[in-house]
Length: 284
Image (cartoon, rainbow, N blue to C red; front, side, top):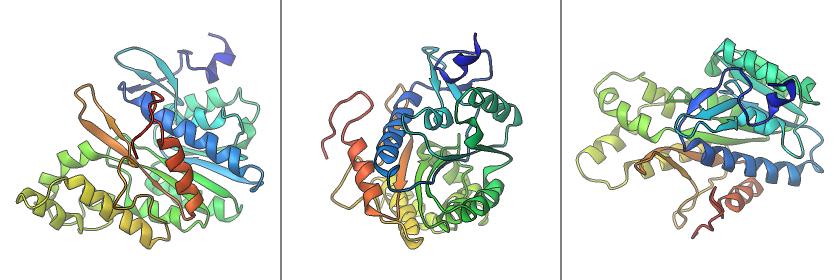
């Protein structure tokens, strides 16, 4: 492989993140949101920052089809109208080194700051950096499990112009909540929701008093986002605005939640969700 292959969706010999077939759908939503965001805002905000707290090596491979995709950081770096600044974080040093090698061939590689370390710790540096450089910001928070702490989301929310795309780990929570509910407060589930308030919701569902558990949990999570100044992206009469990434059995693995402090951001999100990754128009 040649160096230019580093920012193309091909196997370039560097580490790849192993992914399922659902990854293409997730990345398509991100790509299209970035396109709308940057096309609309580049003329209004001279400084725009993209933050990826779980950046990985920059490319992923579908374990079934063996197709290679640009990961979220390289999608943001190679968009038609790039951001002016980038912050990439990952606790895996080898993955971050691979990303750095790939991004180095970009003409705007000098706009990238790399922070090795756990996202829930590195966020302090991210926020400090952004406060020293006022900008319009988009953070993509996409861990592989339930490790995103609410405190990290709340820290990012202290930055005034901060849109968020958040991985809601539906299957990971479903697997973790039964055991966590019988343990003292402080579990990883408590950290994800920022407190124990999820517990009575879960118990109510376990007693058969509720239907869709994750609707109530997502509503709870979004109400907490609203308390941080975010305009809720979903009204009670709307469906489909938290797209689900599903496995080969059509079982939801996780969803993407969107939050913005300005209704224009929510309009952008609705616009890209009007069609799914296959180009089919949504019903809402």
